[in-house]
Image 1 (tube, rainbow, N blue to C red):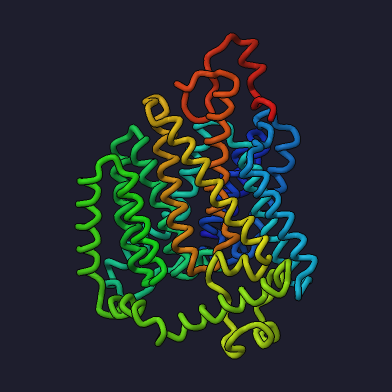
Image 2 (image 1 turned 120 degrees about the vertical axis):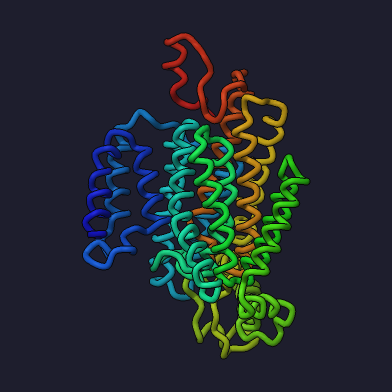
Length: 440
Protein backbone atom coordinates (compact mmCIF):
# COMPACT_ATOMS: atom_id res chain seq x y z
CA UNK A 1 0.00 0.00 0.00
CA UNK A 2 2.83 2.41 0.86
CA UNK A 3 4.56 1.63 -2.42
CA UNK A 4 1.44 2.46 -4.40
CA UNK A 5 0.79 5.64 -2.43
CA UNK A 6 4.33 7.00 -2.87
CA UNK A 7 4.35 6.09 -6.56
CA UNK A 8 1.02 7.79 -7.18
CA UNK A 9 2.17 10.91 -5.34
CA UNK A 10 5.42 11.17 -7.31
CA UNK A 11 3.95 10.50 -10.75
CA UNK A 12 0.91 12.59 -9.91
CA UNK A 13 3.21 15.55 -9.27
CA UNK A 14 4.88 15.41 -12.70
CA UNK A 15 2.18 17.34 -14.62
CA UNK A 16 2.32 20.09 -11.99
CA UNK A 17 6.12 20.21 -12.28
CA UNK A 18 5.83 20.63 -16.05
CA UNK A 19 3.46 23.54 -15.51
CA UNK A 20 5.30 25.16 -12.59
CA UNK A 21 8.98 24.27 -12.43
CA UNK A 22 9.45 25.31 -8.80
CA UNK A 23 7.18 22.43 -7.73
CA UNK A 24 9.94 20.13 -8.95
CA UNK A 25 12.27 21.64 -6.35
CA UNK A 26 9.68 20.99 -3.63
CA UNK A 27 9.06 17.38 -4.68
CA UNK A 28 12.78 16.69 -5.05
CA UNK A 29 13.43 18.08 -1.55
CA UNK A 30 10.65 15.91 -0.14
CA UNK A 31 12.23 12.82 -1.72
CA UNK A 32 15.72 13.84 -0.64
CA UNK A 33 15.01 14.71 2.99
CA UNK A 34 12.16 12.38 3.90
CA UNK A 35 13.00 9.50 1.55
CA UNK A 36 9.37 8.29 1.61
CA UNK A 37 10.15 5.41 -0.76
CA UNK A 38 12.56 4.04 1.87
CA UNK A 39 9.60 3.69 4.21
CA UNK A 40 8.01 1.19 1.81
CA UNK A 41 9.00 -2.46 1.57
CA UNK A 42 8.14 -3.35 -2.02
CA UNK A 43 8.87 -2.15 -5.53
CA UNK A 44 9.03 1.55 -4.58
CA UNK A 45 12.04 1.09 -2.29
CA UNK A 46 14.60 1.20 -5.10
CA UNK A 47 12.62 3.24 -7.64
CA UNK A 48 14.66 6.20 -9.05
CA UNK A 49 11.99 8.73 -8.08
CA UNK A 50 14.49 11.57 -7.56
CA UNK A 51 15.92 11.07 -11.06
CA UNK A 52 12.43 11.01 -12.61
CA UNK A 53 11.50 14.25 -10.84
CA UNK A 54 14.83 15.87 -11.76
CA UNK A 55 14.46 15.03 -15.46
CA UNK A 56 10.91 16.38 -15.48
CA UNK A 57 12.16 19.51 -13.74
CA UNK A 58 14.88 20.08 -16.35
CA UNK A 59 12.30 19.86 -19.14
CA UNK A 60 10.05 22.30 -17.29
CA UNK A 61 12.88 24.80 -16.72
CA UNK A 62 13.60 24.94 -20.47
CA UNK A 63 10.12 26.32 -21.15
CA UNK A 64 9.40 28.11 -17.88
CA UNK A 65 8.99 31.85 -17.58
CA UNK A 66 8.81 31.54 -13.78
CA UNK A 67 12.53 31.80 -13.23
CA UNK A 68 15.19 34.40 -12.61
CA UNK A 69 18.82 34.72 -13.56
CA UNK A 70 21.27 33.01 -11.24
CA UNK A 71 22.02 35.48 -8.44
CA UNK A 72 25.72 36.26 -8.47
CA UNK A 73 27.56 37.48 -5.41
CA UNK A 74 30.75 36.53 -3.60
CA UNK A 75 29.08 33.50 -2.01
CA UNK A 76 28.02 32.04 -5.34
CA UNK A 77 31.42 32.71 -6.94
CA UNK A 78 33.34 30.95 -4.14
CA UNK A 79 30.70 28.21 -4.09
CA UNK A 80 31.27 27.55 -7.82
CA UNK A 81 35.01 27.60 -7.25
CA UNK A 82 34.60 24.94 -4.57
CA UNK A 83 32.62 22.72 -6.97
CA UNK A 84 35.30 23.14 -9.65
CA UNK A 85 38.06 22.40 -7.14
CA UNK A 86 36.21 19.24 -6.10
CA UNK A 87 36.26 18.18 -9.76
CA UNK A 88 40.02 18.82 -9.97
CA UNK A 89 40.56 16.83 -6.76
CA UNK A 90 38.42 14.02 -8.16
CA UNK A 91 40.48 13.76 -11.34
CA UNK A 92 43.61 13.55 -9.17
CA UNK A 93 42.10 11.20 -6.57
CA UNK A 94 43.87 8.14 -5.23
CA UNK A 95 40.88 6.03 -6.29
CA UNK A 96 39.52 7.98 -9.28
CA UNK A 97 36.67 5.62 -10.19
CA UNK A 98 35.16 5.60 -6.70
CA UNK A 99 35.82 9.32 -6.35
CA UNK A 100 34.05 10.11 -9.62
CA UNK A 101 31.00 8.11 -8.58
CA UNK A 102 30.75 10.08 -5.32
CA UNK A 103 31.42 13.38 -7.07
CA UNK A 104 28.57 12.77 -9.52
CA UNK A 105 26.20 12.18 -6.58
CA UNK A 106 27.42 15.40 -4.93
CA UNK A 107 27.06 17.27 -8.22
CA UNK A 108 23.42 16.20 -8.48
CA UNK A 109 22.72 17.84 -5.14
CA UNK A 110 24.62 20.97 -6.13
CA UNK A 111 22.76 21.31 -9.45
CA UNK A 112 19.39 21.01 -7.72
CA UNK A 113 20.46 23.57 -5.12
CA UNK A 114 21.47 26.03 -7.84
CA UNK A 115 18.08 25.47 -9.50
CA UNK A 116 16.62 26.54 -6.16
CA UNK A 117 18.40 29.87 -6.60
CA UNK A 118 16.81 30.25 -10.04
CA UNK A 119 13.26 29.06 -9.34
CA UNK A 120 12.46 30.21 -5.79
CA UNK A 121 11.69 33.82 -6.71
CA UNK A 122 9.15 35.03 -4.14
CA UNK A 123 8.23 34.71 -0.49
CA UNK A 124 5.45 32.22 -1.09
CA UNK A 125 7.74 29.78 -2.89
CA UNK A 126 10.46 30.27 -0.28
CA UNK A 127 8.07 29.50 2.56
CA UNK A 128 6.79 26.43 0.71
CA UNK A 129 10.38 25.19 0.43
CA UNK A 130 10.90 25.71 4.16
CA UNK A 131 7.64 23.89 4.92
CA UNK A 132 8.74 20.91 2.82
CA UNK A 133 12.13 20.73 4.56
CA UNK A 134 10.61 21.09 8.02
CA UNK A 135 7.88 18.51 7.47
CA UNK A 136 10.26 16.04 5.83
CA UNK A 137 12.86 16.06 8.60
CA UNK A 138 10.22 16.83 11.24
CA UNK A 139 8.40 13.60 10.41
CA UNK A 140 11.30 11.65 11.91
CA UNK A 141 11.94 14.03 14.80
CA UNK A 142 8.25 14.09 15.76
CA UNK A 143 7.83 10.32 15.83
CA UNK A 144 11.32 9.99 17.31
CA UNK A 145 10.34 12.22 20.21
CA UNK A 146 7.22 10.16 20.86
CA UNK A 147 9.29 6.97 20.64
CA UNK A 148 11.79 8.36 23.16
CA UNK A 149 9.05 9.22 25.64
CA UNK A 150 7.37 5.84 25.22
CA UNK A 151 10.61 3.89 25.73
CA UNK A 152 12.08 6.08 28.46
CA UNK A 153 14.95 7.16 26.24
CA UNK A 154 16.56 3.72 26.32
CA UNK A 155 16.90 3.40 22.53
CA UNK A 156 18.41 5.48 19.73
CA UNK A 157 16.36 7.49 17.25
CA UNK A 158 17.23 6.92 13.60
CA UNK A 159 16.43 8.65 10.33
CA UNK A 160 15.34 7.38 6.90
CA UNK A 161 17.34 4.33 5.70
CA UNK A 162 20.06 4.73 3.06
CA UNK A 163 20.22 8.51 3.47
CA UNK A 164 22.66 11.11 4.80
CA UNK A 165 20.73 11.22 8.07
CA UNK A 166 20.00 7.52 8.57
CA UNK A 167 22.15 7.13 11.67
CA UNK A 168 21.24 8.65 15.00
CA UNK A 169 24.04 11.26 15.20
CA UNK A 170 23.34 12.70 11.75
CA UNK A 171 19.59 12.83 12.32
CA UNK A 172 20.10 14.69 15.60
CA UNK A 173 22.17 17.41 13.91
CA UNK A 174 19.67 17.68 11.03
CA UNK A 175 16.86 18.11 13.56
CA UNK A 176 18.81 20.85 15.34
CA UNK A 177 19.24 22.58 11.99
CA UNK A 178 15.51 22.35 11.25
CA UNK A 179 14.23 23.45 14.65
CA UNK A 180 15.03 27.15 14.04
CA UNK A 181 13.01 26.90 10.82
CA UNK A 182 10.15 25.50 12.91
CA UNK A 183 10.40 28.61 15.08
CA UNK A 184 10.23 30.76 11.96
CA UNK A 185 7.10 28.97 10.69
CA UNK A 186 5.55 29.14 14.15
CA UNK A 187 6.04 32.90 14.21
CA UNK A 188 4.78 33.71 10.70
CA UNK A 189 1.72 31.49 10.46
CA UNK A 190 -1.59 33.25 11.19
CA UNK A 191 -3.41 30.00 11.97
CA UNK A 192 -3.77 29.12 15.64
CA UNK A 193 -3.90 25.35 15.16
CA UNK A 194 -0.86 25.37 12.91
CA UNK A 195 1.05 27.19 15.64
CA UNK A 196 -0.08 24.59 18.17
CA UNK A 197 1.11 21.84 15.86
CA UNK A 198 4.45 23.51 15.29
CA UNK A 199 4.88 24.00 19.03
CA UNK A 200 4.34 20.27 19.55
CA UNK A 201 6.79 19.52 16.75
CA UNK A 202 9.43 21.68 18.46
CA UNK A 203 8.89 19.86 21.76
CA UNK A 204 9.09 16.37 20.31
CA UNK A 205 12.04 17.34 18.11
CA UNK A 206 13.99 18.43 21.16
CA UNK A 207 13.16 15.12 22.85
CA UNK A 208 14.28 13.21 19.76
CA UNK A 209 17.67 14.95 19.82
CA UNK A 210 18.19 13.73 23.38
CA UNK A 211 16.85 10.33 22.30
CA UNK A 212 19.54 10.07 19.65
CA UNK A 213 22.06 9.64 22.50
CA UNK A 214 24.57 11.54 20.39
CA UNK A 215 27.40 13.23 22.23
CA UNK A 216 28.13 15.48 19.29
CA UNK A 217 24.48 16.51 19.21
CA UNK A 218 24.64 17.40 22.90
CA UNK A 219 27.53 19.80 22.24
CA UNK A 220 25.70 21.20 19.21
CA UNK A 221 22.56 21.59 21.31
CA UNK A 222 24.47 23.64 23.86
CA UNK A 223 25.84 25.87 21.09
CA UNK A 224 22.42 26.22 19.45
CA UNK A 225 20.69 26.94 22.75
CA UNK A 226 23.18 29.64 23.66
CA UNK A 227 23.08 31.29 20.24
CA UNK A 228 19.30 31.04 20.03
CA UNK A 229 19.14 32.82 23.37
CA UNK A 230 21.44 35.54 22.03
CA UNK A 231 19.22 35.98 18.95
CA UNK A 232 16.00 36.00 20.95
CA UNK A 233 14.27 39.32 21.58
CA UNK A 234 12.80 37.99 24.84
CA UNK A 235 15.98 36.80 26.54
CA UNK A 236 14.55 36.41 30.04
CA UNK A 237 11.60 34.29 28.93
CA UNK A 238 13.56 32.24 26.39
CA UNK A 239 16.41 31.66 28.85
CA UNK A 240 13.98 30.51 31.52
CA UNK A 241 12.24 28.13 29.10
CA UNK A 242 15.55 26.68 27.87
CA UNK A 243 16.73 25.98 31.41
CA UNK A 244 13.42 24.39 32.40
CA UNK A 245 13.28 22.25 29.25
CA UNK A 246 16.88 21.07 29.63
CA UNK A 247 16.38 20.26 33.33
CA UNK A 248 13.26 18.21 32.66
CA UNK A 249 14.85 16.24 29.84
CA UNK A 250 18.03 15.58 31.83
CA UNK A 251 15.92 14.24 34.67
CA UNK A 252 13.91 12.06 32.30
CA UNK A 253 16.78 10.38 30.40
CA UNK A 254 17.99 6.97 31.68
CA UNK A 255 21.31 6.26 33.37
CA UNK A 256 22.77 4.83 30.15
CA UNK A 257 22.30 8.22 28.48
CA UNK A 258 24.03 10.07 31.34
CA UNK A 259 26.95 7.63 31.26
CA UNK A 260 27.38 8.12 27.52
CA UNK A 261 27.30 11.90 27.80
CA UNK A 262 29.76 11.88 30.71
CA UNK A 263 32.23 9.95 28.55
CA UNK A 264 32.93 13.26 26.75
CA UNK A 265 35.12 14.19 29.72
CA UNK A 266 37.17 10.98 29.38
CA UNK A 267 37.48 10.84 25.60
CA UNK A 268 41.03 9.41 25.90
CA UNK A 269 39.47 6.16 27.12
CA UNK A 270 36.86 6.05 24.36
CA UNK A 271 37.87 3.99 21.31
CA UNK A 272 35.46 5.83 19.00
CA UNK A 273 36.80 9.24 20.03
CA UNK A 274 40.43 8.17 19.65
CA UNK A 275 39.66 6.68 16.22
CA UNK A 276 38.30 10.03 15.11
CA UNK A 277 41.38 11.86 16.37
CA UNK A 278 43.51 9.37 14.44
CA UNK A 279 41.47 10.08 11.31
CA UNK A 280 41.78 13.84 11.82
CA UNK A 281 45.57 13.51 11.97
CA UNK A 282 45.39 11.35 8.85
CA UNK A 283 43.48 14.16 7.09
CA UNK A 284 46.12 16.73 8.04
CA UNK A 285 48.95 14.48 6.85
CA UNK A 286 47.21 13.80 3.52
CA UNK A 287 46.55 17.52 2.93
CA UNK A 288 50.15 18.39 3.78
CA UNK A 289 51.41 15.87 1.24
CA UNK A 290 48.90 16.29 -1.59
CA UNK A 291 47.72 19.67 -2.90
CA UNK A 292 44.33 18.33 -3.99
CA UNK A 293 43.95 15.90 -1.11
CA UNK A 294 43.34 12.22 -1.61
CA UNK A 295 39.97 12.64 -3.30
CA UNK A 296 36.61 11.26 -2.32
CA UNK A 297 36.36 7.70 -0.99
CA UNK A 298 40.05 7.56 -0.05
CA UNK A 299 39.59 6.18 3.46
CA UNK A 300 41.33 2.82 3.07
CA UNK A 301 43.81 0.57 4.86
CA UNK A 302 46.43 1.36 2.23
CA UNK A 303 46.12 5.12 2.74
CA UNK A 304 46.01 4.86 6.53
CA UNK A 305 49.17 2.73 6.43
CA UNK A 306 50.92 5.69 4.79
CA UNK A 307 49.42 8.72 6.55
CA UNK A 308 47.73 7.72 9.84
CA UNK A 309 49.51 7.66 13.23
CA UNK A 310 47.73 4.39 13.96
CA UNK A 311 47.30 2.50 10.66
CA UNK A 312 45.10 -0.13 12.30
CA UNK A 313 42.32 2.35 13.12
CA UNK A 314 40.75 2.89 9.70
CA UNK A 315 37.88 5.25 10.40
CA UNK A 316 36.24 8.03 8.38
CA UNK A 317 36.79 11.52 9.78
CA UNK A 318 33.26 12.06 11.06
CA UNK A 319 33.85 15.78 10.70
CA UNK A 320 32.75 18.15 7.96
CA UNK A 321 36.07 19.96 8.27
CA UNK A 322 38.49 17.04 8.26
CA UNK A 323 36.46 15.21 5.62
CA UNK A 324 36.84 18.11 3.22
CA UNK A 325 40.50 18.50 4.21
CA UNK A 326 41.34 14.89 3.33
CA UNK A 327 39.12 14.85 0.24
CA UNK A 328 40.19 18.17 -1.31
CA UNK A 329 43.27 19.46 0.51
CA UNK A 330 43.85 22.76 2.27
CA UNK A 331 42.52 24.86 -0.59
CA UNK A 332 39.32 22.81 -0.63
CA UNK A 333 38.87 23.40 3.09
CA UNK A 334 39.51 27.14 2.71
CA UNK A 335 36.88 27.35 -0.04
CA UNK A 336 34.40 25.32 2.03
CA UNK A 337 34.88 27.52 5.10
CA UNK A 338 34.68 30.63 2.93
CA UNK A 339 31.26 29.60 1.60
CA UNK A 340 30.00 29.09 5.16
CA UNK A 341 31.49 32.41 6.27
CA UNK A 342 29.99 34.30 3.34
CA UNK A 343 26.60 32.72 3.95
CA UNK A 344 26.82 33.99 7.53
CA UNK A 345 27.72 37.45 6.24
CA UNK A 346 24.72 37.38 3.86
CA UNK A 347 22.40 36.75 6.76
CA UNK A 348 24.07 39.39 8.94
CA UNK A 349 23.57 41.97 6.18
CA UNK A 350 19.89 41.06 5.86
CA UNK A 351 19.46 41.39 9.63
CA UNK A 352 21.04 44.85 9.58
CA UNK A 353 18.99 46.03 6.59
CA UNK A 354 15.70 44.87 8.08
CA UNK A 355 16.33 45.65 11.75
CA UNK A 356 14.16 48.78 11.89
CA UNK A 357 11.73 47.83 9.14
CA UNK A 358 8.56 46.26 10.58
CA UNK A 359 7.36 45.36 7.08
CA UNK A 360 10.43 43.14 6.65
CA UNK A 361 10.12 41.43 10.02
CA UNK A 362 9.68 38.00 8.41
CA UNK A 363 12.95 38.38 6.53
CA UNK A 364 14.70 39.51 9.70
CA UNK A 365 13.36 36.55 11.65
CA UNK A 366 14.26 34.07 8.91
CA UNK A 367 17.82 35.41 8.67
CA UNK A 368 18.29 35.13 12.44
CA UNK A 369 16.92 31.58 12.50
CA UNK A 370 19.09 30.53 9.56
CA UNK A 371 22.13 31.69 11.50
CA UNK A 372 21.04 29.41 14.34
CA UNK A 373 20.76 26.58 11.79
CA UNK A 374 24.30 27.29 10.61
CA UNK A 375 25.52 27.19 14.21
CA UNK A 376 23.92 23.74 14.56
CA UNK A 377 25.63 22.56 11.39
CA UNK A 378 29.05 24.01 12.11
CA UNK A 379 29.13 22.74 15.71
CA UNK A 380 27.39 19.38 15.24
CA UNK A 381 29.12 18.82 11.90
CA UNK A 382 32.49 18.96 13.64
CA UNK A 383 31.79 15.35 14.64
CA UNK A 384 29.92 14.09 11.55
CA UNK A 385 30.58 13.47 7.86
CA UNK A 386 27.87 15.79 6.54
CA UNK A 387 30.00 17.99 4.29
CA UNK A 388 27.91 17.26 1.21
CA UNK A 389 24.48 16.88 2.85
CA UNK A 390 21.71 18.81 1.06
CA UNK A 391 20.39 20.84 3.99
CA UNK A 392 23.36 23.15 4.70
CA UNK A 393 23.60 23.93 0.99
CA UNK A 394 19.92 24.83 0.90
CA UNK A 395 20.48 27.12 3.88
CA UNK A 396 23.37 28.75 2.02
CA UNK A 397 21.13 29.14 -1.04
CA UNK A 398 18.40 30.82 1.00
CA UNK A 399 20.98 33.18 2.50
CA UNK A 400 22.02 34.16 -1.03
CA UNK A 401 18.40 34.76 -2.07
CA UNK A 402 17.65 36.92 0.95
CA UNK A 403 20.78 39.01 0.65
CA UNK A 404 20.64 39.39 -3.11
CA UNK A 405 17.05 40.55 -3.18
CA UNK A 406 17.54 43.24 -0.56
CA UNK A 407 20.82 44.34 -2.15
CA UNK A 408 19.11 44.53 -5.56
CA UNK A 409 16.34 46.73 -4.20
CA UNK A 410 18.87 49.11 -2.71
CA UNK A 411 20.74 49.31 -6.01
CA UNK A 412 17.68 50.13 -8.10
CA UNK A 413 15.98 52.20 -5.39
CA UNK A 414 13.02 49.91 -4.82
CA UNK A 415 10.70 50.04 -1.84
CA UNK A 416 11.93 47.95 1.07
CA UNK A 417 8.49 47.82 2.61
CA UNK A 418 7.71 44.69 0.61
CA UNK A 419 9.00 41.44 2.06
CA UNK A 420 11.24 38.72 0.67
CA UNK A 421 11.61 38.70 -3.11
CA UNK A 422 8.31 40.53 -3.68
CA UNK A 423 7.98 43.16 -6.40
CA UNK A 424 7.04 46.79 -5.54
CA UNK A 425 3.92 48.43 -6.87
CA UNK A 426 4.33 49.76 -10.40
CA UNK A 427 2.35 50.29 -13.59
CA UNK A 428 1.48 47.15 -15.51
CA UNK A 429 4.12 47.69 -18.21
CA UNK A 430 6.82 48.16 -15.55
CA UNK A 431 5.65 45.07 -13.66
CA UNK A 432 6.11 42.98 -16.78
CA UNK A 433 9.60 44.37 -17.30
CA UNK A 434 10.57 43.47 -13.71
CA UNK A 435 9.60 39.82 -13.82
CA UNK A 436 13.29 39.00 -14.04
CA UNK A 437 15.91 40.07 -11.54
CA UNK A 438 18.16 43.07 -12.38
CA UNK A 439 21.37 42.21 -14.21
CA UNK A 440 24.45 41.51 -12.14
